[in-house]
Length: 326
Image (cartoon, rainbow, N blue to C red; front, side, top):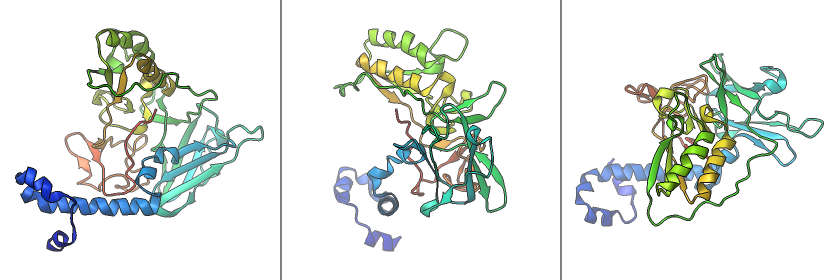
């Protein structure tokens, strides 16, 4: 640690200590974290072309439709031996569509369009990633970048559903200008109804937004939007970080909710969970590539004993920003 103190210089740190001398005993920790940050930024520059480019990973991972209607698939599974794509599109053949291993733990696959030039995977059909581990296991996983996952009525496991509507929702209203001050209405879409059932995005748009506007609020904070298999967790044990919860409706219905809110001059904030994730394996991030780490610390450090969830390893450069983008 003495060597670290000598070699690491934090810009303007002395000014911070002047403002708050009580931080002085923690100088070593500040330097350690600053050193880790600089190393992470350097690694991102080498592997992803910089921090800004990395924050847009949702545009290049999962499944992306290209201009010629080919589909580009990319996953991060550093411990996997092999990856395959299966689903309705290939009759659930487990081996016909292998990914190609790339550097930095990435795997890629390109599906050319059909003869009629339409995408090889139809909108609203199911997919899975088949992971072969170095130990010889065959695992069926949901892409961590899935934009839509649903659950059959009699099942407890969520399915990855390819969301690529022929006529995607087009935003009508611009985002309101940043207000000088916020008056925030915190809401949970699922319980925003007097009825004894899980309410919907459409119900919120039609019945709740007008009331919020009439009460003089200029901001709403929506809770439990990121997909979570366990409803009683109130949205705090996330299984799919890039999918809006399907129990309230479709991604386009959420987009419409936000669009209508914008038309009323209401800013929309999403309650995003960064600190931990569900321990589910078949429909979560846990053991995605077959290892007990991947996105997390290995046990016991990577386990939250009170929540029964997994804890992220933030030192791994590929720990994506947990953000839902609409």
